[in-house]
Length: 158
Length: 158
DNA sequence: CCATATAGACAACGTCGTTGTCCATCTTAA
DNA sequence: TTAAGATGGACAACGACGTTGTCTATATGG
Image (cartoon, rainbow over all chains, first blue to last red; front, side):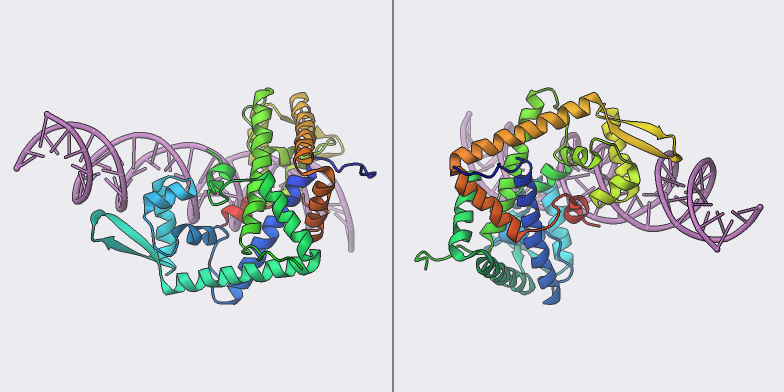
């Protein structure tokens, strides 16, 4: 068995949060340098949730775990920043399809590249095998779809 | 080297966030069952930041990375819930020292125990050695004091 | 002794979430 | 075909929680 005493249980969640923030902060620092300075931390998740085929406010709200009104407001902001645009659905006049603009696609592609670069950095620090073991552990401990981020409600709370 | 292709870089941060939320949600579910149903996710961090010796609004704001006014409002809420109380400082009439009440201390002790229990669960799932390697990795990748959580400002943003 | 710094309270405001309501449109069943 | 319900979206009102700005009381230092 391990001879060292186990660390207190509260360290692990704090490290998880700190590691998450470290990655996201680094991502947005780089994005800002590459021409996307006005993005908020959660916007990357929104882009991923919109996806390449576009979506609607209601569907986006479901994926993000927030109300359709909140999703609509988020879309308003992103539309003003030029990252998404609203179009009509010829098959259903009620729906207004939200799609990424060229600028939005550019940002999404840069995000993916930067995430990969950051993972490469981490791999160099820890060693690829150790990093994979870490990822495997996290998958075991926190299984499920990581995309349902109802963090706004979760963190801000009602 | 590893023969499997590396996972996309964006999976790691999502897993980190998901794992963090999994722990904190479980903590508050248990706390609610043990007589502390009205605590918000971040309140545990606030208790830790207050500490056993008490603190002031300004100092709490510094530790949490928020304004003294925001810290004051948080204290107001916790005071109404009966978790903290304000006293005077005989050495400095300006300061109003915030201390945990018996209820606050009880909650803090239960949190520490629950965190340890959750870590034990994780250790049983992953194996103690694997869990320690995970913790070691996180310390390497996200070093520093995990206690400066300016998450409110970070997440909500101005 | 007076100028400056600090602690705390109060007010105004912005952001972002919520619920409630209303309308247009699609779908389903009589 | 038409009437009833379901669904997508917009508008308004509200609440939680952060911010900055201002004001007073108290310490501190030249």
